[in-house]
Image (cartoon, rainbow, N blue to C red):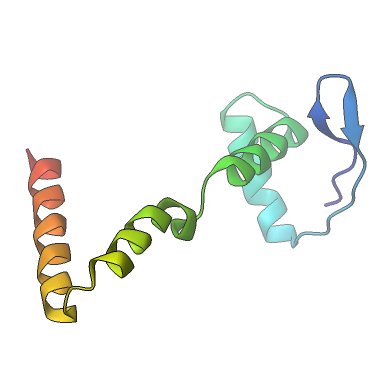
Length: 94
């Protein structure tokens, strides 16, 4: 499958070509159809989501800076992280 003329903004487009395996093309076509979209619209929306979603590194940049600035021993940091993870899990179960 080749995708061309992906929309950047209304009125502006960039033309590019990507080659994907047939199996992936079939999955994309199936998902697009199940959502009532054509393949181009579905692929464009997926690319937009991927481009706008921050990486884990970006999401945790502030946390990393705080940890480095804390100068806490590694065992203490591990305990804090484990406690925070436990709290999040507890909240998700509630």
